[in-house]
Length: 112
Length: 84
Image (cartoon, rainbow over all chains, first blue to last red; front, side, top):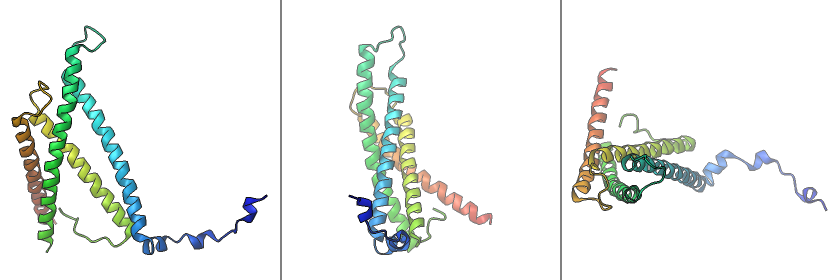
């Protein structure tokens, strides 16, 4: 049984036409690419945010090196730090979206 | 902003422009977050809720940042035009 032998060898360059992809399937290909890019960006963003958060909470909460284990105060400080920063981040996100929308509106008005 | 008004008809360039814009926006957001954190979250973690002062500070911080953004880009545009 030769699965390979059963396949018709098509001329690959005829099937793959970049112009056709953009013209006939233009919208969905671009959408897919945008989707991919956005997901990658979001992941990278999340990792960066997490990394910053850990740095901040360590910086602000930990200053006692008489032990190599976190004490109660430091643990609860870290918890509060995480929550507070997340809430802060959310609030900034809301205002950012509002201001961005305003800015785009202004740009659109200026372009007319 | 200078140079951003051109319509891109080439889909590759469109994608690149969109990607660049996304990059810029996320960078701006991260920057605002960092700056406003330094200026507004001064009381370190006595409580897990944002205080009223911190919330209001955050709002004003974002607003002012965008205003600075406008001021700087206007000034920059004028400067670039004058120096051509």
